[in-house]
Image (cartoon, rainbow, N blue to C red; front, side, top):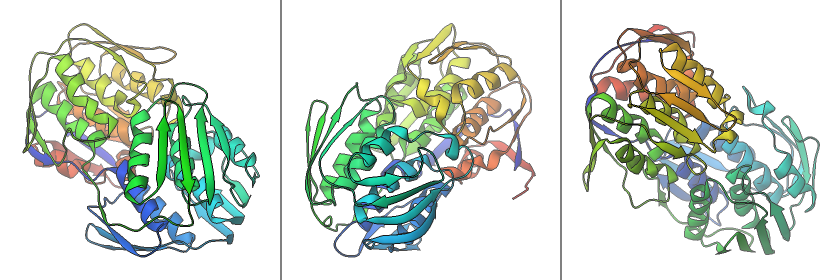
Length: 421
C-alpha cells in the first residue's frame, strides 16, 4: 500500500487503541487457565492474530465477538505441529517457552519478514539447560521436551521478552523456579506488566532486586480482563499535537505499568503544552527545544521521539537504543535515513541518534516494513512543507490497522495511491 500525505493541521480527539503489549499477556494467561474466560477491549492486528493462532494451534479456542475475545484453555503434550509467528517477535519470545512448558514433541516454529533473522540464542540456551531440545537458535526451530522448574540465568539487557516468556511458562510448570538476571534489566516495565498480569490470574511470583521467583502450578486461575489503551500508539498522536496541532487522546491514564507513558514527561521536557485530566491527555502546539534521551527503558518510542526532535530547536541526542537494530528493521539506521530524506540533519551513532532540528520538507520514502517507521513519518509528513508518500504503508497492520483512519479523523490528508494487498 502506497499512501500520500499532504501538509495539514492535526486537531481533535482520538481514542488510543487497545494495548498490544497488554493484549498479548491477557490472552496467553487466559489460555493457560483452568477454565474458559474472556478478555475485553481486545485489539485487532497482525501481531494479536499471530498470538491467537499460536494458542489455537496448541489446542485453545479463541473466538471474537466485537472487541471481546472468549478463550478456552490450551491442551498439554502437543506434538507434530507447525506454528507460524508471522512477524511477531513478542509472540515468538512468549510462545516458544510456553509451548515447552505444556510439553512439546516435534513442534516447529516459523516466522516471516525479518523475524527469522532475529536471534533467540539466549532464550534457547536457557531452555536447553532445563529439559528442552531446540534444533536452532533462529527460526525455523523445532522444539521437543518438557520444560522443568529450576534455576535460570539470563542477561537483562538483551530482551525483556525472554524474561516475560519464561515467567509465563514457569507459572504452569509445577515446582519452584527462579530467574536471576546477570546484567541490568532494560524495558523493566514490560516485565512488570507480565508479573502483574500473571498475578491477576493467581500466579505466585516474587521480585527481589534482579531475581524473580515463581511457584509453579498446573494451570492459572481464570479471571476476566479488560485491556487498557496503548501508550505506545498514543505517543504518535500526542507528538503530533506537540509539533503542530491540538490533540486530545482518550483511553489512556497515567496509572499504568506501560513504560511508554513516559512520552508525557518527554514531551514536556521538549517544551510541549500538555494538560492531563481524567478525560484525556491534551497536547497543543508549542515551541520545542532539544533534549537528551536515554532510551534504554522506552525503545519503541525512539522513532516518534526522533521525529519530534526534528521540529525542536537545537540538537537532540538519543542513547542506549542499540536493541533497535534487531527490530522489524534496523530502526536506528532507517530512522536516520528518513530524517535525512525530509531534509533534517541526523547522525546515526552506535547506540542512538543525533538530530538537529530544522524545517522538514516533503519526501518520498519506503516503510522498511516497519509499523513504527510508517506511523512516525506520517506525523512528520503532515507537518512538513511539501507533499510526501510512504510506500509499504501496510506495515501498520502489524500493530495499528486503523492508524490512517484515526489520523484522517484528526484532519489528516492521507490518501491511498496504490493498494497491492
